[in-house]
Length: 354
Image (cartoon, rainbow, N blue to C red; front, side, top):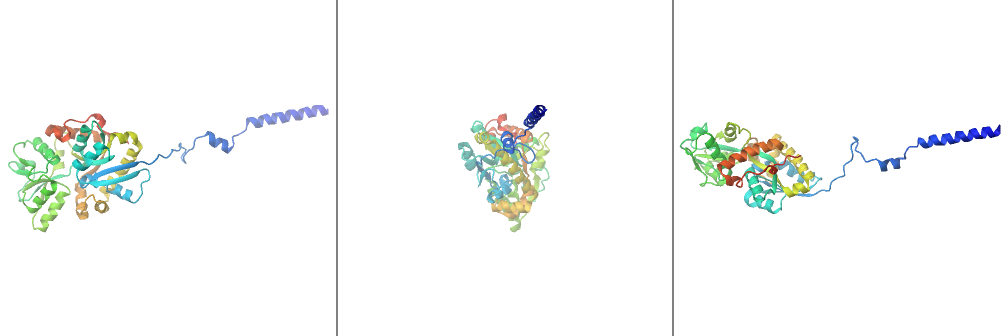
């Protein structure tokens, strides 16, 4: 009897041991070593990337306005994902394009035709990230003549700054059947600032000026007891041309291809921040004008405040940017191939990420 009871007890102990082994759970230490770390939402945790140095050039004037809030964030130390250095330059041809060619800057704001030119001259060394400025050109008069349409320019001389404004105005004349009927003078006052002063003084009767030069000319003329009239918004005139609405894309931001390939996350992060900066400038005019002056993008805060709503500052990226740019560059190619570097950029010119 004792032997039978002892045997039953042994069997019971053995069964209990087997069950216990089968139900054994891993200790917290064992679990953490086997399972990946997760965020609070249950997603796999991302390893923080190493911050990189990002050197950025922007231009003074309209092309640089959208960078103002981002420059303030950099100055305040609000950006920790990368180390940004942003400088304001005055000359795209002499300051920005050479730096892109030799690789001393990573991201830059510049005119769109200049972006195409540097792409062609570097065999694809840059890519366009986004358009940042739509049309900002206006036709102004000082002689009191009534100009309410492009047709009213028939027989007149119009002073236009050299290069890009001349190319754009030439296309507008061609599209409206005015080629040969309007004299385009792009040599008397080739620099926008010089033409601005001539308009303010009443020396020039009809001219094409960009903002914020228009606002400055009007203010200077008023002080001298003269009047400068804005006769035509050339962006509105451009949009009247069939199949060309929304394609007057005058400014952009580009990135060196080598930098993009080495640091795609940094480029995507920049674009997110830059898009937010553009949005801030467009919706906070007074505060943005103060930042524009503070960071040297444009010296006169009051002029910037008046000009911002007329500058068509924008953020146009992806497929929408590519479509508008291709139309625009095709137009410039027809007007003057040298304006875009002699030929159209290939498809790899357009960055469609983010």
